[in-house]
Image 1 (cartoon, rainbow, N blue to C red):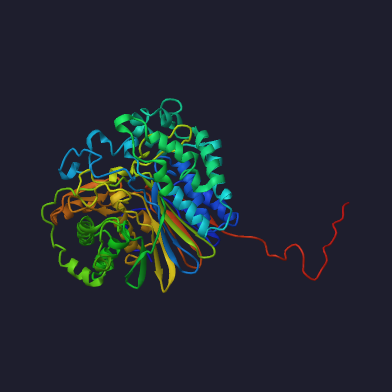
Image 2 (cartoon, rainbow, N blue to C red):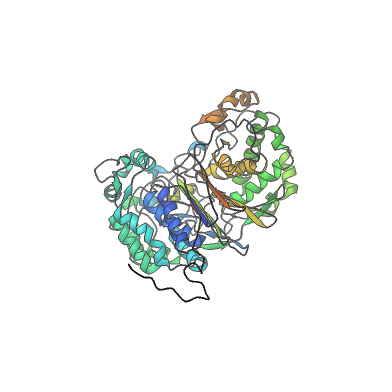
Length: 562
């Protein structure tokens, strides 16, 4: 039973079905995965089809030339995390950018914004390699079938949503500086209006090449050659990614981190991701408190959440990194004993806010959650980092590259400094919850640094506050890194009481991005929240009984005409 008197009303409706479930942040992304499930594909097939379709209809969020994480739980109970995060190129080094400031607010900024926009901001992409790898190993349908929905959307076009139209308008100034991306996204010289049809002919041809060649089209083939050629242009603003970098890139298969909370197992990705470590850490801290008794959205519960998130971010700054370059003390950070030490840092009232912490992760990302009737689950978060990535397109291909280099520290000698092959930490949190060995929830969301604290709050909503899935994903959120506390509008009535507890409070239109999730039981329930174009596609019904047409002990009856 949900808690009484929730301070918000759900804006979307869930859907249920026993035959499969696809939840993405665009209706056409969900439709692509639904089509593949209906054709007999499994959850991995459907997830990859949806991700490829999202590169067409959410070009501001994701691309084959981006990076991300996919968390798979197969029907036999095995978990695997496919790390397809972008990495620094082989010829990059710690001094490729000139930092403009040592101040916390501008610590990650580089002169000329060369780590944010243009070819000089592009890291070696991993998305396509990761998607093709997981579909080849865990999917069931021919890869050519998986690409078909995306090809259709790119070649025939699709209706622009308000969300996409607004994103193009927001970035129009910089998009107009690159003729190729302007031609794709602003064919009339301005952002298309909601409902206008957007066709991506060059990208459709790139997808057809991928349909024939798989990841090799980009990692060793013609698309990779085109990308590398574009990276070499621009003089001082040229990039570093080469065909050799693309050929050398490999996704990494990692084991998830699995913690426990009130009898549930919580599985999330390991470093370079923050979520597996710090969601476990935060839940371990909260486990000692009567969260349900505090009441959802009470000043006491919001203060406790803010303190727990603050402590987790302090440890994230101290220890996070690519495990190939940084020793992350995972066992210590995720232990119950360490949580007891952390609880000693929880303040009865906050002191003056600390300076804003250094670090940057764009909130412009996409997420999907998919499951099939056989028990296979995929929860995946993928991105091109900033809105429209590097804000350029590779001529003749329609490919929009990432600007992942903005996540590296432009100062040499630091944990996040540029090193060849390094993958930067990420807040992506594709999470799966289990009870007695069986899956009960799968969830995730975009939102940069706000992702994993938002995922933690949803887990608390489900377990402690006994919310329905739809309520849990739409519930208001709170966030901090130790400086001012951000709250969403539904929490605004508590602003004064939080200030009395010592917090500097900012009311925000939203915290993090559009979460989507699936609950498992007698049937599956899918939910998406109001913060994005999230849409649920549930597969019910199924095929006819094998004996519907002919009884096995009788010959077929001839039909007669009159």
